[in-house]
Amino acid sequence: MTRVWDVATGRLVRGFGERMVAFSDDWKTVATWRNGEPVRRMALSSAAEYPPIPGDTGDYRVRFGPDGRTLAVVGEKRIRIWPSGRTISVNATGIAFSPDGRTLAVTGEDRRIRIWELSSGQQLGAPFTGHTATIQSIAFSSDGRTLLSRGSDAAMMWRVSTFRQLDRLEGTGFDTLAISPDGHTLAAADAERVRLWDLRTRRPIRDLPAGAGAMLFTADGRRLVLNTGEGVVLWDGRTLSEPLAGTSGISGLAASPDGRWLATSHGDQRVRLWDLRTLGPAGVIETAHGVEKPQVDDPDGTLIVPPVTGIDSVAFSPDGRTLATTGNDGEAALWDLTTRRRLGRPLTDGHSDLDMAAFSPDGKVLATVAADPTKSPSELVQLWDAATGSPHGAPFAGDGSAIQAIAFSPDGATLATVGSGGAIRLWDVATHRAVGEPLMGHGREVYDVAFAPDGKTLATTGRDGLVRLWDVALPSDPLPAVCAVAGDSFIRREWQRHLPREPYESICP
Image (cartoon, rainbow, N blue to C red; front, side, top):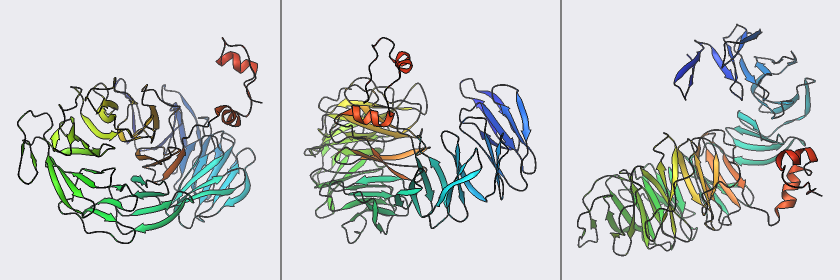
């Protein structure tokens, strides 16, 4: 049974029994149906109900067009468009309306994609061919120029105007990312596999015989560290090492920038250090966030502090001298790796749980993620002065969703956040203000984010199973770039609406 609730008031808006439902993009209209019965349309905010639309025999599906009025009824061997009543004779497995509502992309059992003009009901151009397995989903880019398709074999990008393939990314379904220090290799992984791509050619290099829940490249880029179900292993380009002892089920993974140390965090309040040259143990830091008691060094180099809670994440400072930890008690702490002692008091704002830690490239700023005390499950970013432990202004980046990953740009000026809301957001570290509009494309939850070393490319992966690459470089002269997108200057009427206090000026040539 489907019900719609007003999240602000908790009031039940409408229930639909055992019928299937589809909502318009603006959430003002809903269509409901049951196989063998007509499609009913109604307004969500009122009792208004529109004339029913004939359904189809057998199983069928309903999709709204972007205008909220057009409906596609997808049956076994045809698609009917309402209110025009046109019929497209095709056995469709999936459809997507273009943003302007003029065309419909259709996938079929033959693993091809066809574009249909809705005003005429005619197919445009030749089918897109290239998938060798079932196509699972398709979607237009926001400008309608590019079509994205995801199959069990690969994800593909197509230029709609030329009906040509733009790009192909082998494999889908990845949860976590890492980019090599030279920016040439992208690694993407899920629980079953790790796949390597050459970022210069966008082609896959190879699959590794392991899955990973987290991973990172060592500083020299020669080895890839994987947190597998059996423990932490290292890939040297030829073979996988045996799992490091006692690393099964770790909660955090970090490598020092000098390539000397690997740190793993555990649910037993311990951070274990490993020598990356020998892969042998190099000491233990036992943490207890928020406990003020004497610290004693054992002869074996262990830092003893009364245990309180486990550790969520670990991060090395860029100079490799300091380790940041966040714990289940909601606090962050900085540790001197030479003395194995905590530096200053724990970092806490007094009312939010701190999770996730990342140093800026110059080591001066530490970013943590904090729960928004006023709006669950929303989370915020808190920046800290890594030298003094003082907060850098108020928390920011709250958009009502949980944050899944954060990453600093290589110059430290920008922070990227991704989360359960599906948005990829860039933030100015100095002002805490958003840089441009959110990047959208995964549609749903975004799992991980990573900058390329040159800062020009951002890689993300999400629940849609795709790895996406974003061009985030700002042009040295933004005017030609803006004009290329806009196509022309504002006409006088547009200028008056957007810039009423400024004298009119023709900007684009």
